[in-house]
Image (cartoon, rainbow, N blue to C red; front, side):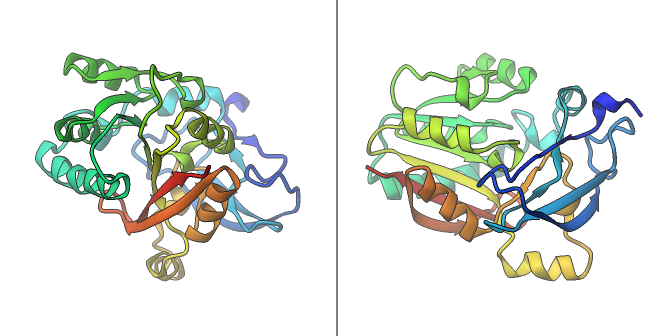
Length: 264
């Protein structure tokens, strides 16, 4: 196996930077739709002894990422399940509107995937823009008249501060989420909200499926973190956000949705 495709090992917890780590679980990612036999199938998960965060022992190398991102999974492509995705996205926009109090300003969606949320947010009256690392997705959204950029969140500079920054099933994909949270707070409007979604390892279903050996997230090739609600809330607070709304996600298995205001 090409050594360049092996994971880049963490030297410390990517959230609190403590170095005392203990083995947590081992998973097999060979059943993932973007898996290639060139990439190691074994994923070792560790727990930080200081903050309790659970993460993979290492993140994918640049060479491995090229293989994984060469093509999008069906549900990550713009236009996938347009009716069902529109209905789910509408309920998400309603949650944001309830916290904002009205439809106003700019909505930035990070990792927009199938693009449904951008379309619905625009339908409600938000000015929208999206970020995604898959060039084909960006091109498809631009053809539909949606502003889209193939750039990391930390490198994006909006023309005006967004009222909403959504990052659905994004932070668990980032090797180091903290710089993205710092940047999100910097560019967010002072009265804006951060809207995040990810699997919740604190929920009962997670524990039940783990006990049965059926929890799919231990073998999730593209994930580096298994956040629990408590650790996510602490991380948001550490980076200048106050969680104000919690909900269960309709988009993905065992997911949570959290809206957090920018702390002044």
